Image 1 (cartoon, rainbow, N blue to C red):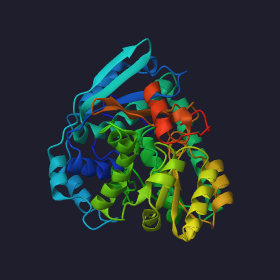
Image 2 (image 1 turned 90 degrees about the vertical axis):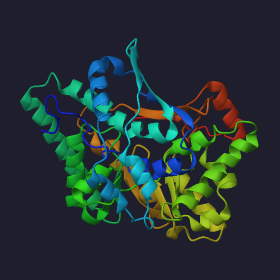
Image 3 (image 1 turned 90 degrees about the horizontal axis):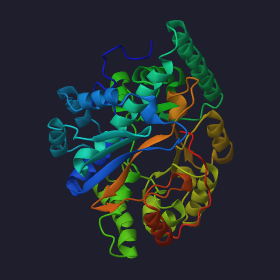
Length: 417
């Protein structure tokens, strides 16, 4: 079976998280360790009351357990040897920080069926909670949905899930040039099912399966850990100086410069949609950076329109787009992967960050849950994205940021994952 045994903790290693938490973690430790931030749980599927679906005491028990975990010598040794993207990626001071690391306290309550979960502390300490707490919440919900099923019915759920996974794999094999990356940690059905999915994809897709964002699974199966950074970097830096519009804009330019200073070009995949991709490529990323950086990740909006814009932009700069990488990662399934492939294959390099549809396709309705920066440096954090339905922040802050970044995007689509 692919569910935990009674009394078994959901998270059993602090490496059971996404690789970008470490790349971002070192960056933050070296530059912004003491910035006060607050991350908050957000349920974008409002019809599902997570606070009613799971037991708050059980969630608290799981969160408290994770606070007892520490990085082991073997885990630190693995991270020390991670150099696929740059020579000696993780410095010794960061590894020593991890050696002594403990997840900080959290605030948890349920109000009218709504789960309220906040993580306030210094940025260098609190940022790791996101990809730890989300899979805990998601697995508790999965258990609640399975609870009234008999053992035989539960086995049927996983048998059908495996058949769906194999059908997807067979479809991917018909296009052997397509490569996928597991991005499914945050909203996976369960830890054991996630491990099963990654193992099967690694064995059955072989060269088409590029790696996994999950460090524990990369260690377990000898895979490449994949990931760069997330929106929280841009969101927090935009909170550091709100004195002028130009200061906010400059924070985004500084982020690119400092990221390159930290890692060189090994992790030079831009994430442009925090305040709108159009503005990012017109006014934040320089032509020199466009030439030097490997490419970008598309995480909201229409991936084909986004890809076509990037291709045109590269060509305008005299850059061959076939030498640049595009990583779509927004709620992908096989059909959307194929649509992107039909439109963009051969025009730009493509890798697909395949997440919830791969690790949570067990026949139940999915939920779109996230943990985002709500506040930093004493002011409200904002994210716009290329899908305004994903926007987070206070309304007045969102409107100000729309003006600053000349945001006129009309794309709005309910988040399935």
